[in-house]
Length: 440
Image 1 (cartoon, rainbow, N blue to C red):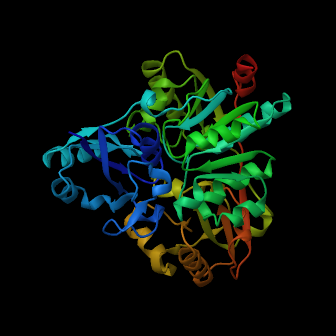
Image 2: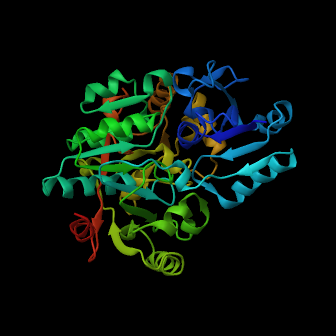
Image 3: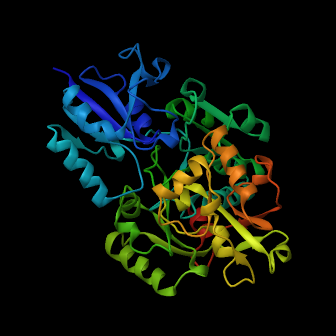
């Protein structure tokens, strides 16, 4: 008899897990996906939204339905599910076990797959950059690695973890080289935050859903592939070098979240980031945890210095901070780069919550830890309009944006937007140049 399976996910590792491990195995029947957050994939109601037949293979000619995760208990019973696979990231160990308890109490087996089951092998060297939490600084680290490799004469191509928010059939394999590629693929704010910085430094970046097809395309034009991992996900590719980022603002999280702890324990090099804006004792905690959990890992200490364009324009002003959405929502940070950049400055930071409209208002309800910042949410055209309306209503004189992209390119508001930039800056030795010289 076939094992009837549900894959729990968030439009990333879940799809990859199906493609690599389940798609062509007749001994399994993947009955459904459940989606942790509807913001990732639009309206997921009553199984009407599907993982398309173009991706699901010959065993699933009608595709696979996708349901909200809140329906898991009912689905296990109604669909006579034998096994539930957890396949998404950046959740606490406590939350993992709550999901296990819900699954088991309804009569199904609860499972996690390991790297050997989900990693693909490339015929080119792969440097994977992962993290222990969302918002640690993976992308700035990935770009620093790319610059070093380019200066060494290597052709670098980046592959980014998926963020599929629209028509999945159109997102099987996407290649981004120019800004027009972002418009062509109707990228959301979060997607632009991840792809645009690569375009700025002249590196081609791939993303999509079928990561076997993606890596074969990338191999055609790369000497070295950089996996720029999303959230704190396990690399989709078997790495020849695994660099993992920790956050000195969140000491201890490296041992409290899944699968961030897996990354932490398997890293070749561990970067302790944001030491310039955190308590020095926090870095000591992470170092001690590294020595216990992964004593062979190389430790790199790093800062993430922040600069505000035209910074004199914020002095003495009423300021609205717009910060990176994933960092301050899923990453549980009360403020992001914009908030840290304005610390100790002569500014009046306004509270945007009273101006929030529509889905932006709902974000504050769902993430009550948020401070006096506005998350840069833009998972749909409607949400972008609500973000613009919230900013237009806000009683402030200037916007400080701590997102990785230039917000002025995608929203139109009635106030000037000043961009915060941040890059990785290693402190002392060893540094990334030392690691990469040995790698090459």
